[in-house]
Amino acid sequence: WVSVLLSIILVYTNVLSRQISTDPLTGLNNRRKLNRYLDMKMNSAEADSDIFLIMLDADNFKSINDTFGHAAGDRALVAISDILKILFMGRDFFLARLGGDEFVIFGRHQSCLTPSDIAAQIGDHVRRFNETTSEPYRLSLSIGWARFDPVGICTPDALLSAADQHMYRVKAAKLAVAR
Image 1 (cartoon, rainbow, N blue to C red):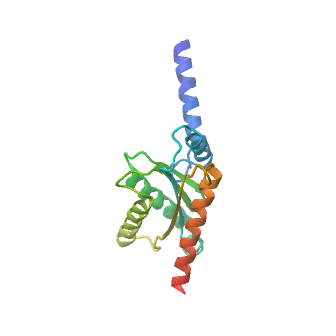
Image 2 (cartoon, one colour):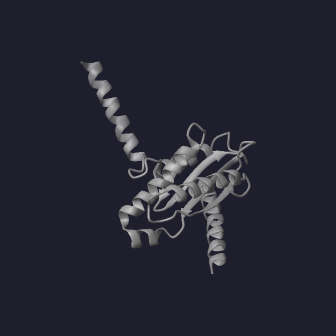
């Protein structure tokens, strides 16, 4: 009985740990787990300029909520997370919902898959979603990224900030073209 009780406690602890580190809406990792993961990866001996972080932000997300309701906004967030899950299934990337309508992809540069390649693939998946969905809204994402740099961008906060700044430059450029 002691073994059974210990097994139950271990399973319960594992379930609680997953709940604490998972975004309940999207099933992706949450900000808490992202922070721990970035600390571990960026403070390891493996940290080098091959490490990058991609940040995605849903364009005009507030208007989805305001026009179609919060349930539609939730479906949009789930659709974005599903696109990321499908695109990165079986690949060695860390996916997280940063909060609100922002998502993060953390990975290592591979010869056939750079951050700009990933951004293009995500864009293709979003276009396909928009062409086939029965949802009343259309998704659009602004995507920015940054690479680890042992001299400048060498902390998790610095990497997140650099990717965030790049993403907002992309978003601002989209707004300028739309005007």
